[in-house]
Amino acid sequence: IDGNHHFDFVVQAIIAWVPTVRPGGLVCGHDYRGEDKNPRLPFHVVQATNAYTDAHKIRPWFVTNADRCPSWFWVKS
Image (tube, rainbow, N blue to C red):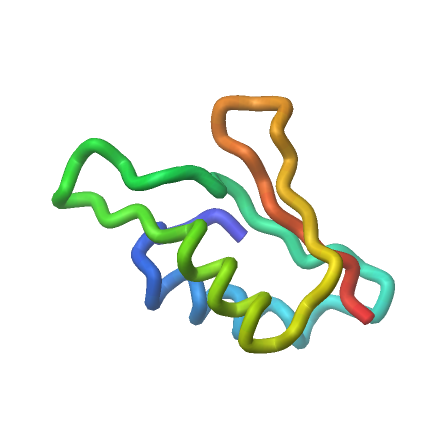
């Protein structure tokens, strides 16, 4: 998942994509990083991903740290 980075759009994208992933498949997204410097471009991937995984009690889930724009993912049960 890598689209609009505003909170509502990130959550909507996760909600839309999760049902399409088969059990054992990966649900993943990009740009798990802090707020962008441009206030006109909201960047809420961290907050939205955290909120979704907390609300759905998704454990474990992971964040990569090998590049400038980390990705997040979990294995769908």
